[in-house]
Length: 103
Ligand SMILES: [Cu+2]
Image 1 (tube, rainbow, N blue to C red):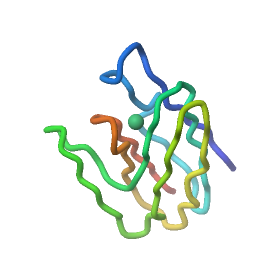
Image 2 (tube, helix red, strand yellow):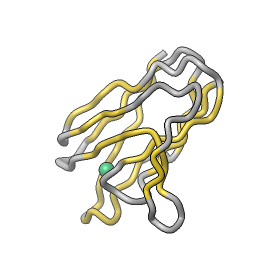
Image 3 (cartoon, helix red, strand yellow):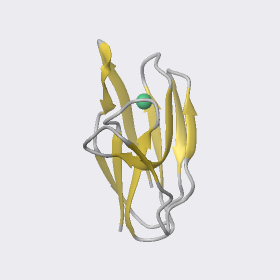
Image 4 (cartoon, rainbow, N blue to C red):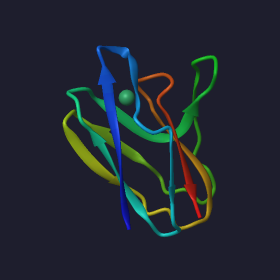
């Protein structure tokens, strides 16, 4: 099963965010991230903390994610082969955090 999740922008870079802040998938699934505007995103393993500091971290059991979007494109992320909760973020845009729950 492949799920879709979109990335979009409203008027300024400050408000760039994931349309959904979280996604739940089954073990072994991949999902597709869609960048539906002309904005570059670089999605990697890690999070932005509440102070706006990037915290890169490859969590145990997570696939290594390093996906560059150039705008109006999409990429498949995964597969996630181990159940757990994982964190992805956009290294360019603070607050662009995505939580992936694998069941
Ligand atoms: Cu971004």
